[in-house]
Image (cartoon, rainbow, N blue to C red; front, side, top):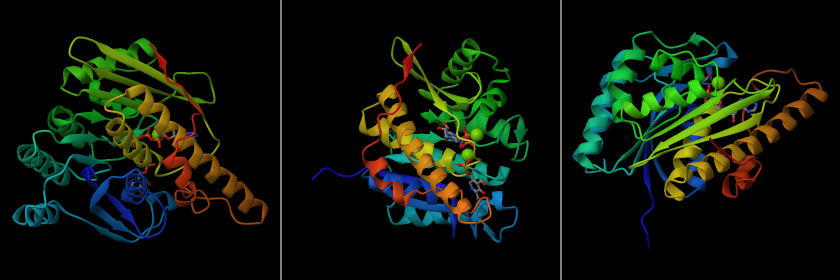
Length: 300
Ligand code: ATP
Ligand code: PLP
Ligand code: MG
Ligand code: MG
């Protein structure tokens, strides 16, 4: 039988709820990917609750886990997926590991979500920007920044579609084959726009997809999105428009189910908040297996 793709996913773990590895591993498994998880934090719940307890993995602990894999020849991966990182020392260690993993498997596909902030605000230490820009991004094959993160990485403000395209080209120049802007606010009010750009041998394909914004603040959606994209880009052999449409179709399925659940619970008297808005991921297994064909990407 064919061997399954093997993903190393370095992301947060929460006991209750769905962010980080908790929102990435299940969909990857459902789509046939074996996932090897390194939990970069072990928290009771995501930080959007305002209060949480738990432990943060440090750089030395990450290096130890990687060396344990190495000495047993367990470090042969087809894909590496990284998300939120909270410290410069941890990100530097991730960089060392990316180099090692690419040495071991030169075909390793590295999907980097350079999580730094949103809506004009950075929520990680400032030093992370230059580490992403100068070290991680040049080694990444696929990146999934949001609009603000693209602006940080390129030093350019995005106010229209042409700016978005120019920024994606700058990121290609930094060595990235596939750039996906997970969300931007360039479209009409009430919509989020995703962009994707893939650099081929002699041409670049650019795609755009508008998504209706639901009136809730979800958490874990960025992590779910990068996992779905990794999966669909692999399954489709690099078909970016299909990967974007399928990933965003599944994501909307999850978010509609989550909204409907939250609204129903509120009607029954439950207090509105992050607990009701935890992604209804397991309940959405069918939307992950067979992505609803809700959206079609437009070629720019
Ligand atoms: P990251 O923080 O991981 O770098 P991000 O800020 O783009 O990325 P999200 O804001 O979670 O991450 O957006 C990822 C995707 O989730 C969007 O493309 C969109 O499809 C979906 N999404 C998130 N929030 C909403 C919402 N309120 N309504 C509709 N879709 C949403
Ligand atoms: N990891 C942890 C521990 C978090 O608290 C959060 C958000 O609160 C996330 C990851 C990121 O979630 P998202 O995918 O919405 O960016
Ligand atoms: Mg966002
Ligand atoms: Mg995120």
